[in-house]
Length: 196
Image 1 (cartoon, rainbow, N blue to C red):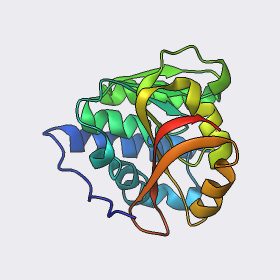
Image 2: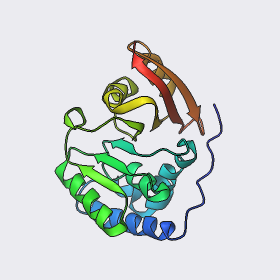
Image 3: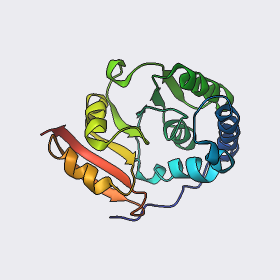
């Protein structure tokens, strides 16, 4: 397992936009379930910084990305703000998609929101696919594969059971996997994804 680089230094103005996003997320969570109620006072530490740890893992020159099951915009909207990479955010829940549209308006994030099921969205494959807390790895790979461009990578923050998920996924998929970060909260980097 490689060390996960620390959160990147943010370009001027980006930290302010991320703080605007965090404040908006805390306000909207009082009306709809975007994050757990206990996390409202810790949006920056538990959600924004957790998303930012993916930035150093993104290949240089990545032209666009797709975030699956974007929910509250984690990690896709945060990564779009931090890197300037255009992200397609795919979210089936109408209320969460409405939040994403408002967050895009408030922060001017380079994102396009798709209020659709992942299996039904019509997007050109991208060289980067992300998802956070969406599904177990075997299911997640099935959702990501049609949207991942040849030679692209997936970045999936995972939990302590990642080894079990990897073993299950290898029954149906072939891929190279690398874990970055702490053992209790690694980021799974997937390359060369193909059906087994």
